[in-house]
Amino acid sequence: MGYKTLRLLSDDFFVDNGIQINNDQYSLNSVGTCRIQYAEENSVCLVMDGKSVTLEDFGRVLTAFEGFNMDFQIRDMSDEVIGKNMALKQVNIHPDVIIGNFERTLGWFLEHNFLNYKFESACVEALVERINELELLYQCGSRAEAVEVGKQMKKRLITIDHDTDEFPDYLLGLIDRVIDITE
Image (cartoon, rainbow, N blue to C red; front, side, top):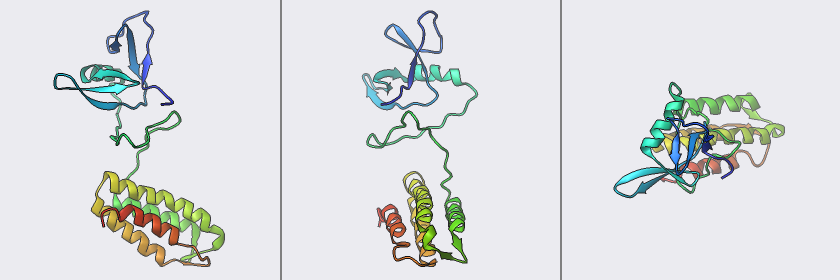
C-alpha cells in the first residue's frame, strides 16, 4: 500500500484518544483503509497497516474527529484500495440523477440530436463516466433500477444520428457488460 492509515505519534506525551500498540501510539490519518477480521474469543478487529486494532480502540481514536462526518465504503478484498493520491468521492446514484447526467453530457456534444464524427471520441469518453455511475448503481444500489437505467441509456444512444461507423457500439457494449450480469 502506498500510504498509511495509522500515523505514529511522538512518544514524548500520552494521547488519551490514541491507539496503543506495543510501546507505540497512533492516530488515524483522515483517509485510510482497513480490513475487517474475526479475532479470537468471538471478537472482531480491524487490521490497519498490518496492525490489529480493536473496535474499542478504533472508536476511541475516532473521538479526535468529533463533529466531523465519516464516509465509508465496504469493498471486496479483490477491489482496488484507496491509494496515496485517491480519495472517496460522493456520487449520487439515484436513477433520475444518472439519466439527467447522461442527457446533460450528451447535450455537450449533440447538435439537433446529431453527433459529428469530430466529437465522437470526446463524447464517448465523457459518457463512460455516466456508465461508471450506472455500474455504481448496480453494485451499490438497486440492480433492477440499474437494468432499467441501462436500457434507457441504450434506447437513447440508438436514437442519435451520427456520421461515424462506430458510434454507439462501444457504449452499448459497456452498458451490456454492466446490466447483463443478471440477465
